[in-house]
Length: 344
Image (cartoon, rainbow, N blue to C red; front, top):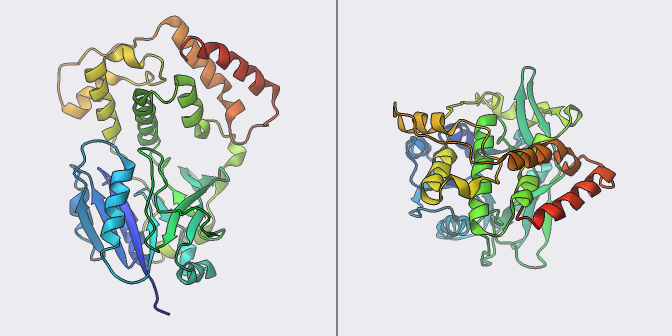
């Protein structure tokens, strides 16, 4: 039986803050790394060019569209004949280093074509004592033993790989998919602001739905944070790969996108979204290096500010760690129904 090639499929747009360490780590397990770059301007393409296993392809799209980029990556991988394992990872996601020793890695290589591969998906954070993590008990289907099945996805929050109906799933429990999204807290919050604006413009979700969906990670009690086990990082550190520090630039592409929305639709369009806790005039000045401050004001009414304060104060009822039978959550849902009648 021919050993399958392992492909890492990664979309990139301005990921220089973490891309080099991601490619160092992925180069240990991937036979080939395919990067679909969507017009990066921060040196991401130059970083990718330094790695011999990387093939960089251009994603010419000017809009955010996950299906398109996933199909580009999939098509490029399928240009190589023979059996393949496809692992679709974002640049801020790392296989735990115990893939080097865990028997689960051999299970991946031995899985029959048509098998989906799911990972537990802990969120990694940093504090003064080192790396910590919290786990939503959620799984991410990020792998597929390729059998040529078509891929069906969504514009946002799409399934990353083909998952044919009824296909078997190899659910891993030792090898984790470590999500480094919170290592730069400001970057993460910028991304959350943009996600809400993007989905709100689609007209498919109301402001309260967006708030509840995107803010559970801000409400976890301190007790849910645990030290990252040494075997998740040790194999990387022994090879000289730093997986504990973070590069914080303070400049984030999602902020630029939101400023573009302001220019196109006006500030009032987004008054019911909780994106007004930052200084947009300063962000504009930092992004475009202009001395003159563009006048961005908070368009919310007093009532809208109070509703946002109420959402923040009650978000803990909607936390993954909250009591699902809480009376407080029931009351919140009743209030939300009333607010829904007012367009919330």
